Length: 342
Image 1 (tube, rainbow, N blue to C red):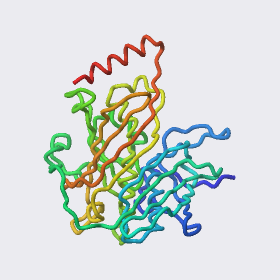
Image 2 (image 1 turned 135 degrees about the vertical axis):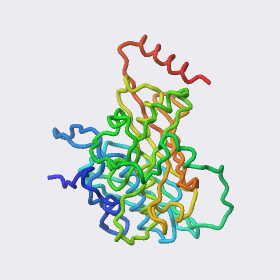
Image 3 (image 1 turned 90 degrees about the horizontal axis):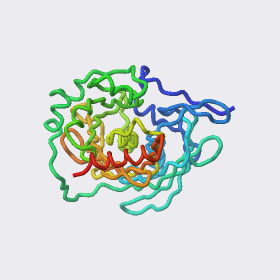
Image 4 (image 1 turned 90 degrees about the vertical axis):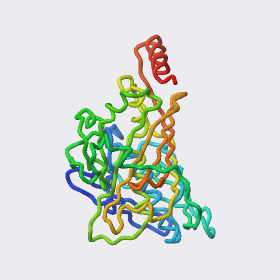
């Protein structure tokens, strides 16, 4: 019998530390102990099983790798490849290869598998020491930028809803709120449609505001655990949001992540989800300016509430569209191109 782990329930909160819980098998092998968020069920060996959210294995693989590096090193870059459908209710086994340990950088390769031993996800991740260096970026005022869509409220003033089981259905409610649909986090549902109607598809952007769910008594000070939360959330709706951005949901057949890269630009202090002032909120801005050859390129930037550019994301996703005829396909393609013409 396959070992099962409990699936998350949005109505039963999990802290971020609980969601990322792993156990050591040996010094370069770790196993997850909690279930992942999941999408649709699919048939595996004659049984309906839940498809795992890719952001879970993406984040947890890096967190496992962090256990093999010097504690002063923080994840700064990771590129991961989603190779097979993974099961949300089955443990992940993370096998870590030590590629290099240097003075300022340490590199790891991680392969994630499940009970059948087949690798479902693989990454290369690099950790580094913080350095004193010029900090240069384009200034951002997050409160001003999103004043309208938040109706002047701060993120922690938004209501929290636990009844959503599918984010795609949640958008139809027109609500502005936070949800616990991704265990370990609060993440926003915002009325994008009103904003998107004002601009052409190629210029449309989304923003997702998020923070971790934490236990006030938890004094864990591992910054790589916090960094993993950014990785986890960075995979939220990425490929699906590209289809939505270009108005292609009605002809969507399937969509899946192929590869995903996140690069952190700051030290541990800007990555953390709490400080002396309490909970810290982050803003993930995303959009897609390139669709071609059955794929879309999803890009994102993560900012903290003070406008510090914390990380950049880049995700390549496969998109399959379905049409009744070649004529319908060609007509729709021309329509999408025309709507996005600058």
